[in-house]
Length: 220
Image (cartoon, rainbow, N blue to C red):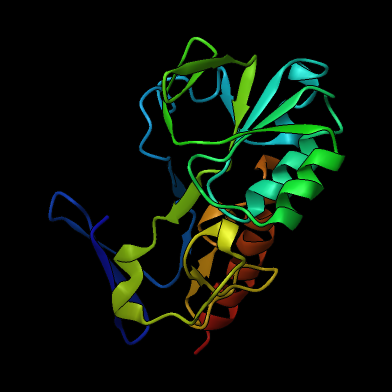
């Protein structure tokens, strides 16, 4: 989808092939793209030996040798949560400078630090400089980039989530209602952290709300 425009009581969506579709309301569930660090091997091993969520994948790698790749402030909390799953955690600083306090906090949790930029990851091997470090799984949180650019013409209200969630997101309430009276948005496009069950619940709430809206709209 390329764009959505507002024409009084009708929204018109222009598709990538040039065709248009008109509707009185829309539910946006266009999701996100995960933006990975520019390190060879990460995307290729995504979902296999490169993981992101301790709650989704922690049990699968419990008590194994785990690595955490630093990509931002959230990485410190990420490592702390993973410490619940294994006593063998290595934190790769990826060439970033940390304070003594940050280093001490990781060390007291029993987390080892490896300094220097990570240059590649393959077959469980993290290459830092000329030294290879072996892990059973490497964790980091990619930056989510929501698919909402096609809604730009509607000037929907946005908000700034925590840094780990990426840039600004469309603002929506619990039913998915946005600042536009005919647009609802649900799932990862408005809440990148939402898992499948949560996204399904939001979609259900939006569908019921939109149905009620259209019933009343019929009588205007």
